[in-house]
Figure 1 (spheres, rainbow, N blue to C red):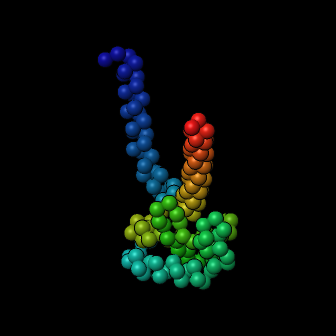
Figure 2 (cartoon, rainbow, N blue to C red):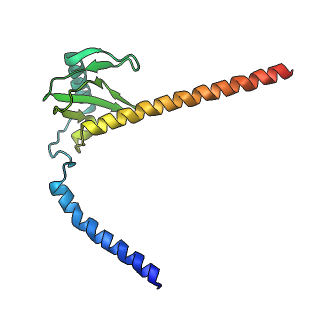
Figure 3 (spheres, rainbow, N blue to C red):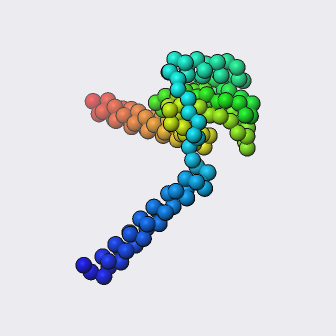
Length: 153
């Protein structure tokens, strides 16, 4: 075994020991821990809670998605339905306030709340925008090709 290989193995071993020691420290001192409070529900019951939440706090409609915009008061429970590529409803929350955020899958396992929801929503909107741009470019290129082919005949 060469000198460089021993050096990298030593670095890897020290890093593994460091991470092993840090795991319990992150758990006890980190602020990213999942909530310990969980609930058991069915999709139908949870859907009813989302619908009641939307009816109670709706303030308008999002033009882009057609979903209701919901503005719950700080400290209240917040229910959202997570589907493939979308979150329902659109939330309008006050900066610096705490809310209890609930997604059906989180009833069994907990989640880091608002930043994850916001990040996922932003990524979803970026994806949709990029998809629309790519589709537009494809359609434009396709139309140019068809025009050239029609012009040649």
